[in-house]
Amino acid sequence: MVHDPERQRVLIFYRKVIQFPDHADNLQVGSSIAVWRDDLGGRPVRPEVAEGSAEPTLLFGADGPRIAAALAEDEHVHAFACGGRRGACTLLRAPLAHALERDAWRWYADGGWSPSSRRADELFDGAGAMSVHFNAHAGVYVAVYADREEPAVVLRTAPQLTGPWSDAAELVRPRDPQAELRIQDAMLHPELARDGGAVDYLTYYEAYGSNLAKYGGVLQLVEIHWE
Image (tube, rainbow, N blue to C red; front, side, top):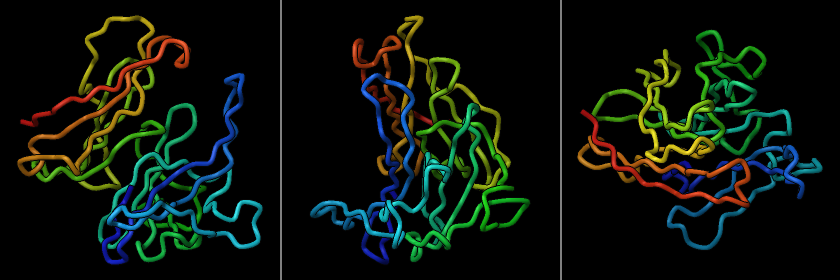
């Protein structure tokens, strides 16, 4: 969710997915942005952004970016799209005022911004759900997500959104030693930060076993004190 105070709205990034009952690979239909009043009254709406399309509410099609994190800066909305096996993340942006226009989006490539994603720089390997925000206490951008190989939450830092991003460093490892424990949907919540960013709050989901529906899991909340 990205706040756009000038237009009194919140932008909510989402993906449309068809999930099959046999838990086969999901079918990605596309992604887009829903809009909510910034007083959070009423319900979010999905504007029609692709006139004449079979999916008129979708900004991007099945082959488009899978947004993992987004934030507003300098009158632009920036989004990290992370996909593929390694979760390689690219960066795209659009003016906040034109976020619902497909042609307004540009990808970071070769030190500039390109209308095509083909040459977009892969900034780091992340995850399908993560958080990225500027931590004023440390003076750096912080990306947090669940590691793909280990049951751990990791972080990377960078002086700018475009990088260079640091190597991944372990932030939290659950105390439960279960071999099949998996970590999902790890992210910080800068809207809850205290003391100028010296204290952050992390949430993540501990999933037990390979079958989430059968074994379930636990949502965890961790208070992080930065040095």
